[in-house]
Amino acid sequence: MNTMKQEVENRIAIYGLISRLMLNEVDETFLKQIESDEDMLSFFPNYRDWDKRKEIEVSELIERYYNVDFANLFIMHLVPYETFYIRDDQMVESGGDNPVLELYNALDFRVNLSGARVLSPDHIGVELEFMYMLCVALQKALDADDKEGICEVLQIQHGFLKDHLLEWAPMFLINAKRESRTPLYHDGAELTLEFLLSDFQYVTEQLAVHCKEEN
Image: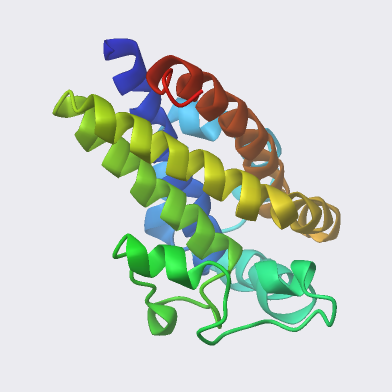
């Protein structure tokens, strides 16, 4: 169980990192958080070795490079919303018919649309933040040794990854990696894609362990 607690802590850290990267433009505090942690920085190898980081002030990098890349990937040229990929008419559903909203409401997950650069609750950053919240819930169930709670949260995580994130996010992330203009967002897209695939496998394995009766 201690091993799983550490694994969940790692999952919380990564979901927190990638959701933040995709919800809003970066700031100096966020970049320092990455750069001060060798393990975290190892997820961004091209960013770590980028010459411009040594040549240009951080504030200028943010203004001239990172903010421009964020706008390109998440606002102007690509569409980071689930409904765009799953609807035949490729329209973003921002109202009550959005496919994730019922689940969010059932679990009391509130989306602060005005506090992030998003138009709809099925934005990739919000869906990643939802997984972050579910990992925190799993951590609490583990701390309480709540076996039913552990199984229930794992089932929700598995369903959300299978029915939502993995249904569309890989297509967006592949495009984001290709269209990115900075190593930060190139590495971030690659990290997110690889992590989602490996995390789904991890959750599937944990389901077999903790939900034996249901499987």
